[in-house]
Every structure is written in structure tokens, then in C-alpha cells.
Image 1 (cartoon, rainbow, N blue to C red):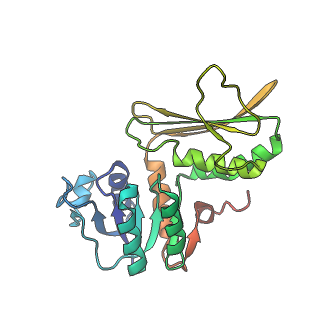
Image 2 (tube, helix red, strand yellow):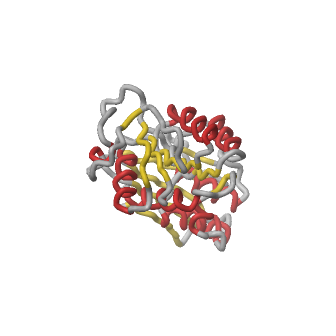
Image 3 (cartoon, rainbow, N blue to C red):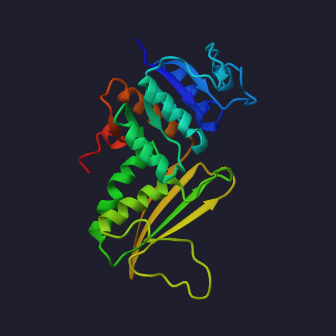
Length: 267
């Protein structure tokens, strides 16, 4: 029997692709396609909206009484409803929403005592490999290498820097024993903007329909090492989220990560 899946943020770019690829995979039974009350797509068949076949599940603000797992790529404003529903109904949660506050992140940790939960800023396989190795590279190269992170996304992305860029910075800071997040320098301007030691430069580009580009630059006098990840489309994030959802079903309550899903603990 396939696990029962709810997709929160079903009308969004990510939500529609999650529904389409979940249908294509044949590994899930979609039982809920959630959106805010009064959304223009309310009542529309979620499969048809996603460009796939009809699945007799309308987009709605009403969540089903039972499910095995929810995938949430919505907005921070929808966070409370998502978390409360999953905790109360013991539904596993794959949380890909970025821009959450510290208070909301603390609530995620609390909820993981009740349900199995994965919270990740980026669920692509390649990006999670980069998350795993970037700290090791920073440690191997040492303090003589300046570190700059450049992330590029489409014009519609609301939060900056991206959650993935912040995860990269956090992992680098931990490896270099830098105080995070105070070590971050978000852009530079002015006549006195020289780079300071023991800082990580952070730069956000928003333009056109760029899906996602992340470059971590390690540079010293004489050479530069750059680690890069390019997302060609959203499907790599979606496939990672679906892989995480399948893995998470049936797990004990706890906070898991894509490292667990992908078996990256060896890095």
C-alpha cells in the first residue's frame, strides 16, 4: 500500500511539481492538496492543476483527517497550521519552507518529539553533498583563504539570503570556528568596505527565472577554489523531497536530515 501524502502549498511552483512527480512515480496516494482559504485555485483538481491527470483531490484549505506524510513548500505564514496539524494527527513532515523565524525553528524541534520530521533548506541530492563537504574544504584550506558565498535566484523569491546559502555559511563557520551568524557580511558598499578577517561574505542576486545557483569561493593570494551547484529546474528539489517523504514514513519521532536520507554521514 502506498503512503498517503498531503502537499501543502499545492498551487505554488514547487507544490504543483511535487504533485505531478508524485503521480508520475506511482509511489504515493495523494489525499490532500492544501492552500489558504479563498485561494483562486480552491476546488480545482490538484492533479489537473499540476498538469497531470485528475486524482479527485481538490485544492482546499481543509486537511484530511488522516495521512502518513506531508510535504510543505509553502510560506512562513502557513507554518503554524502545518505544524499543529501534523503534531496533532501524528503525520510525518518534510518541511522545505524557508525564511522561518528562530521561534518557528524552535517549534520545529519541539514537534520532532512527537513526529518524525525533516527540515531542510534544500532537498536536492547534489546540494546536500555540497552541504556535507563544504566545511571539510574550509577546514583543509585553513584561515588564509577568504570565503565568499554568492547565490542567485529568480525575481520572485522573497527571502534573502537563500536558506541554502545560510546553511553553507553555517557549515563553513562551524569548520572554521567563526561566530555564526555575526561573521556574515551581507554585501558591501561605501568607500571603506575592505574585507575583514574571519568573515564570510554573502551576496544575493535576484533576476529573471534563475532556478538556483550557489558558489562558495575560497580565495587566497595566488589561487582560488570554487565549489558550485547549479539547479537546472525545480524537479531536482522535488525528487529529493519525495525521496525524503518515502524514507520518513514509519520512522520514530525525531529530527532527521537529508544526510540521514541520503546516507551522507561518511563525509
